[in-house]
Image (cartoon, rainbow, N blue to C red; front, side):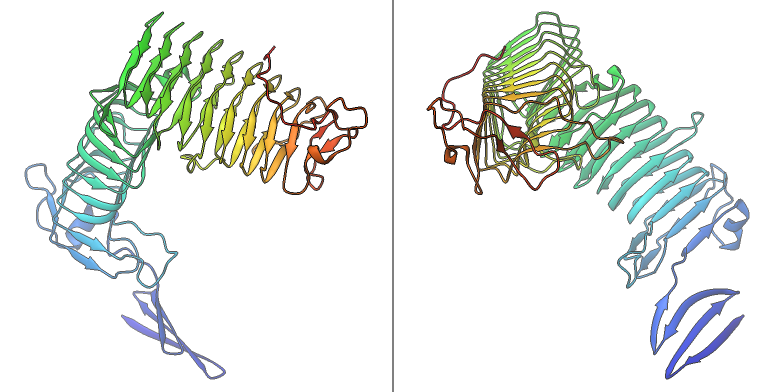
Length: 503
């Protein structure tokens, strides 16, 4: 049945074309705007017969969608819901499902609450399995990605030999992912059990492992990629990448090794888990992860350009000193999510020219989220934020912070920022709450005294010093137009040369 509805408004003719009672397109002034639709939509076993597919739906004789070549359709390609018959989708090519639109959301192959689906040798924008029991994806290519979530624990799935623009495995179980290449996207593995990831290459990706049980990673090759641990559980940091590499260099993983000593080691990643009093001296790596390793020391070491910095989690009483971190995606991060890593010392490190963040957060040379830590004698330059303090009772003393968008940003109270040199940061010092915090602290118990300030608008060296004691006669306010702008009551007339005691 085909009906036409005509409506004239002024000189403009508006025409809608209806198929089976559903509007398929909209025409205005001789321009056609199609509505999005599913090219193949199967919502029960009966629909397989309606489409006239070959096969009977058994394991021996599955229904078959084969050789589909779909281009310039507006809407989803193949949608399968609420079926348990066996289905094979083979040798299909689907592309440009947005039609003329930029902002319509479409999927190449989408399966939901279905069973027994096998996809092989297909090239599609994306493949999504939601709540699929017994799903298999082999030798497929997707521009956007492959996403599997909420598959039933009684089922299983396989992803093998695929190339994808991203891959996410969420709330899944009993799976094998092998011989895959993921490029220019995210590789998320979260809240999943009984899974094997083997021979997977991640190129220009961010790897998110979290909430895993009985999951193994073997022969994982990271190329220009980062790893971001998002979890709050200590076990979330227990990520053993077996026989794996980062930019062609081996990943070294150590667990339960008290008094471990590593000297002059070259590595992709160095990963310490529950290694009390471990010591790293003169190592070179793309990233160093330290978790549940109280008393660890990292000294005289280097993070390669393009690396990910030093990440300290669930660890107290650690010392990170005399390390160089040039041109990394992160600098030194302490306790991003755990809020447990207290009483650590960051001393005489060089951090400069950080790249873009891997998690969308602001980039900082040093990020401190916990309490009672010391940051002393470091040089931090050319970053979005030089030092970010998100915890309380921290001491920041004797550092040189230069050419950053923000020199030091403080998001909590009771911190001491004294005796530092600030050179030509866009904003030298900022006090404001974290964007996710419900309430702002008062900041009245932070102290910013005894620093040297050089900025494009004013410098403490321009202030008067009538008694010649080297301290400006009037308080120096960093950014008068900002709320809660820090005030230095003892600003220094000249830069501070000596290394100060951190006590």
